[in-house]
Amino acid sequence: MSKVLILYYSTYGHIETMAYSVAEGARAAGAEVTVKRVPETAPEAIAKSAHFKLDQSAPIATVAELPNYDAIIIGCPTRFGRMPSQMSSFLDQAGGLWAKGALNGKVGGAFTSTATQHGGQEVTLFSIITNLLHFGMIIVGLPYSFQGQMTLNEIAGGSPYGATTIAGGQGERYPSTLDLDGAHFQGELIAQTAQKLCG
Image (cartoon, rainbow, N blue to C red):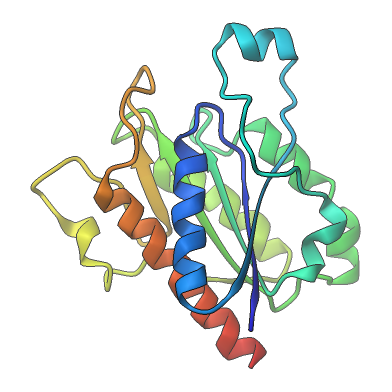
């Protein structure tokens, strides 16, 4: 049984919702799944005044535990076309793991959200994937075998580089069924890939 970590940062709850759908997909493939988040680095007063979702139930991850997993799937919203500082700060602390090659050969993936359809989803995914490649990880995206991302019938996230959702300018749009299906699909595919490599 492969061990999969869903590691996320979510400001308003959109990525948190996606993370649990990714986790359901990984569990459907028979993986042992852990969902954790990175620490909030914004001052509490600012986070509260901006209405950050601070009551998330997922425990806080540590960099030291990352080698314990066969696959790590990272999710975070975009900040001006790249990952936010909270996730970047967490990954920046993993230099010791990089130096030891502790994550070489593990499976990685990424998912994200943006306010608009053209708000930098693919660039944000690549900002995550770039880190994972530097760690020596094997990347699994959201292939077009997930046909839902090709729809023209509704606003939908999705990219061959990872599952996505569109949150709206005020955070008013939560992940649709189609967006969650994409996250589930990617989680399942990553867990299956990790199982093949570990098996």
